[in-house]
Amino acid sequence: MTLPYSTATTGKRALDEIQKILRSFGCSKFATGTDWDTGEVYIQFERDGRMVNLKASSRGYAAAWLRENPWTHRKH
Image 1 (cartoon, rainbow, N blue to C red):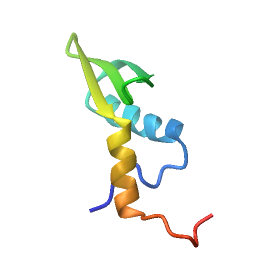
Image 2 (image 1 turned 90 degrees about the horizontal axis):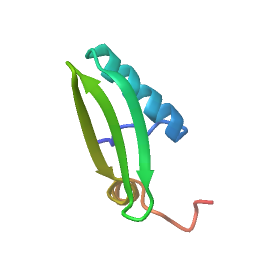
Image 3 (image 1 turned 120 degrees about the vertical axis):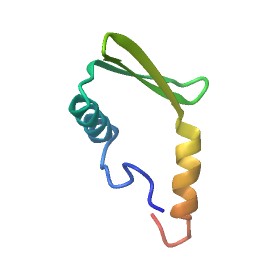
Image 4 (image 1 turned 180 degrees about the vertical axis):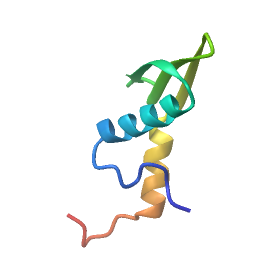
């Protein structure tokens, strides 16, 4: 299984892709943030007059990426 946004070259491109998907579902008022202390990334948006807050662990994503792309001595 491939990870979502594993081919994005920057975090900005991944966030732009997320925003594009949310707009296609009729969402508005898109915002993002990072809590470095807890290692969480969050997005907020409005859908049908309701504010939605989603949190995800950036540490968990990094661990999953390393499982799919294990580090070897050949990588720079």
